[in-house]
Length: 109
Image (cartoon, rainbow, N blue to C red; front, side, top):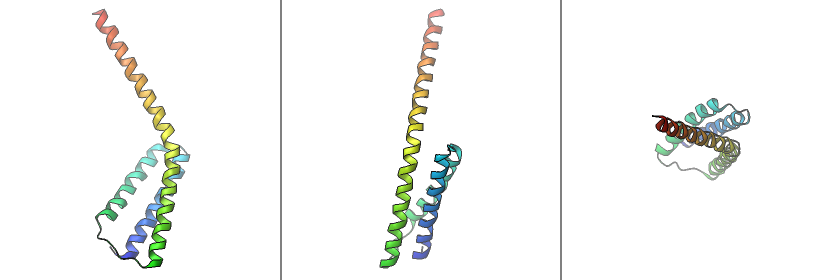
């Protein structure tokens, strides 16, 4: 991977996380999950590529892009974590209800 390809991949990740943030703000959870899968593919390609030497300007560009990605990620987490907590609570209530039904059924038998 060349330095231009690497920076383009980071830029694509930045754009994807921006789109993910929009999806999270709009509650489009399925779309958000699809975008997350796409991000994983780009991250995987960056992780598998050989180290690339960057000049000072390229390094500054990379750092700026990564900061944007991290800012988007923090905002996405702030929107999704309450939703995940809510889903966990619902699952807990469903499981508790199922245990109650199972216990009641065992007593009737």
